[in-house]
Amino acid sequence: MDGEHNDVGELQPVLLVVDDDPMVRKLVVRGLEPLNAAAVIEVEDGAAAQRVLKSRHVDVVITDVLMPNMDGRELMEWAQTNCPEPVWIVLSGLDTFDAAVDALHLGAFDFLAKPPEVQRVRVAVRNALDHLLLARDRQRLFGELEQRNQQMAEKVRQLEELCRMLEDQAELIHADLARAEMIQRALLPQEPPALGEWSAQTLYRSGSYVGGDLYDIIRLDERYLGVVIADAAGHGVAAAMLSVLFKHRLKCWDGEIGEPLMPDQVLKLLNRSLYDDLSAASGFITAVYLLLDRQSGEVWLASAGHPPVIWEQTARSDRQLIKRTGPALGLEADPTYMRAHISVAPGDCLLLYTDGALDSDAGGLSADDLANSILVSEADRSSILQTFYETVASLELPDRDDLTMILLEHKQGISRFNDGGEARQTATAAAPAKSAVLEQGWRGNEAFLTISGTATWMRSSSFLESAQQLLQQYPQLTIDLEHCDYLDSTFLGTLHEVVASKPDAVRLQHLPDSIRALFEELSMQTVLAHVDSAIHPLPGQMRQLRRVEEDAERQAQRLLKAHEVLASLSDENREQFQGVVESLRADIK
Image (cartoon, rainbow, N blue to C red):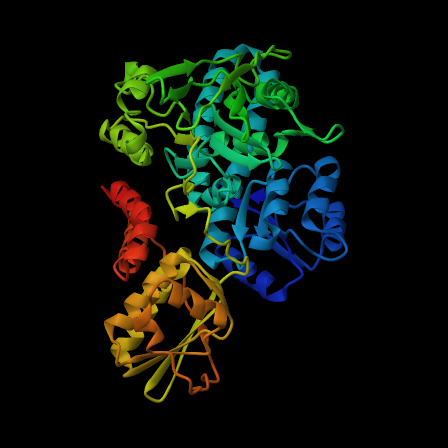
């Protein structure tokens, strides 16, 4: 029977797999085999899935985002009204990330990156079934409460216990928070804009894998700059989803008159847009938005219940706390926000931050502590954010909050964004979006590795592990880069490690001009010396590398090692990667 319980109380579900790629459907179905399903139905597009959902009961739908005839988002919109019972899991590639976020807004339970891994499919669907089973149990309990008023007190106790079980289960459902972290980081600005006579440094650290902090620095036009920092109430996935709402509803420009909106208008529009959603979720968001005239140095700002902005005036050796000008977003239906106006002189700076450890009752720092002990002098500002982070980390608070800081200086210089992964600065070029494919093969006494697409830090450990194993088994390793579009700094450092470990056994071929330029720019002479002009044909059969699963500490160690290698190659590299290396060392401590 569809979606029934067997004798031991387990759910025998009906599962629907929707994807136009037969290979993806095969991978998903393989992951579903151990789940004791009553039926697993495969269809190739949303229209076919719609017909199945009209004709029979389905418990869980695993759907792609982009498909012919009807895509996954359209299918979910239809199901909200016509078939609301199933639990939805979305399959998404990097190029459909925005559509996957829309699917989460429509109520998707979880999402999986494509191509899906068999084990992750199984875990995600099992969690969805657990969630579905708990939801049905709750519905049954409510029915019994209505029919048996005389046992109301006992049923209320059971309901409270069930709610606690649901809260515990929610933590298990999101065990694979590395995927959620991808969404969180995608909301952050990808690289600093050109700021002219201004510079900006940022530091972002979530209290767990994901958090509710958000910031952005937006170049509105040639004259005006918008800067926003926000902190959603709570921690983890719930707070992260509130920050998603904030990001998508932030409006900084008045298109009708062609001018930037003033900060008080920005916050008022945000509150109007977010109030119903935040009230329903019993949540709120604190935020500061400032509008900067880069030519005159004038700054207008408004604060929705956020910690004070610190304004350091270098010439006067003075600093001020600019406090909130209205309530947090989501607390009142129609609040009033005042607007502050200051003139920031050359050499002055503004520091914006989230509450983080700024709680003296919990043993942390107060805003006055931060203003008096961290902002010391113009010469020492380059280390302010890292110093503050180290101070907070040393407190060892039992429940550390997310921490975000923006240091905005009226001084020309290099702008750096530091979100705990790759440190990005104005001169850094954005990587292409094509996902990396790593393959290995062998023929006779020679092994081969190919790198295709965009190779980033997420695949560097897989590459290193495979190269080390092949060099132990074969006297010659050829690395083919014919279809490689981009290597980030972590992958470049890892590649240098491989070549330097056995220089007589490694050679590179099919080197694209863009990759050669990266090697030359970073003084990777050892690698360049092993580029072979002769072409060695690949074996007839190549196999994709398995993805190496690592915890956060091992990932940080891999990032640190790769950047230490690059920093050692030249004085220019040492200066470029010094901030990354110091930040990663601090994180590992």
